[in-house]
Image (cartoon, rainbow, N blue to C red):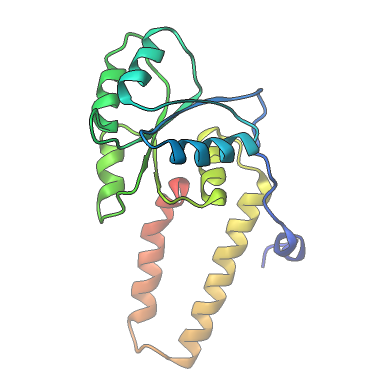
Length: 193
């Protein structure tokens, strides 16, 4: 049983993203002004400097003009899609800005498809503020030890629940072994929630 459980139970995520090396600039690319307002407000609340454009072409133009960002959040727009825009960005000499896919596409296999295109992560709209916060902290490599402790506590609690269900033999033999194997397989994906 991990020490400090009571402090973990009381732990709430702060209102800012934990980054040690100064203000981060994020470019939001979305063809919907309301989406831009919502994500920009969220990012600003978390302490980021936010810039936005309404098309893939504007995004490419900004990067080609020398604008520098720490991250790009890219919607999958209809005209010049996010994937097409990202392909154009990758052709710009020296382009190394991580790009996160921001999309309503939540079909099975969508995350793998976008990660396969080279996006560093995938956020489904409508998004949850805490989900965005956690992803940004992971991307910037500044997850606090309290969040890691909280995840450890979650898995510890889950293990206790499974043991309790196993004792009651609710689902028959073999179910718990399959569940454990599935959880172990899923753990590598925890890095990119």
